Image (cartoon, rainbow, N blue to C red; front, side, top):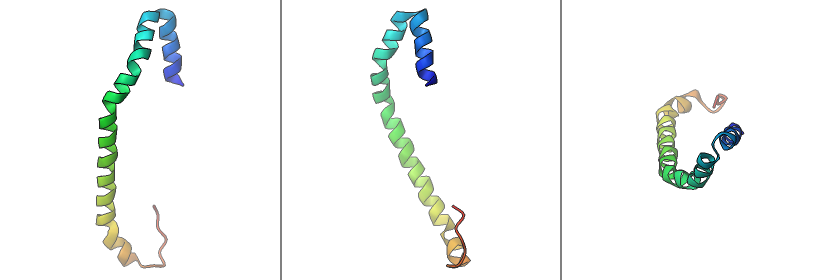
Length: 69
């Protein structure tokens, strides 16, 4: 929402720059897509490591204990 409002302000102040930003947005999104995918993969690795490291504590806690996460 804020991005759209800022774009509208830019459209009023300098419409050629606003149109250039509107045209460049898909290319910037495609350029940043690999970094988003890398972030998802790294987050998955960290979640896996967290699960592996906390597994012994969860096993020792027993079946009657309630999970906090």
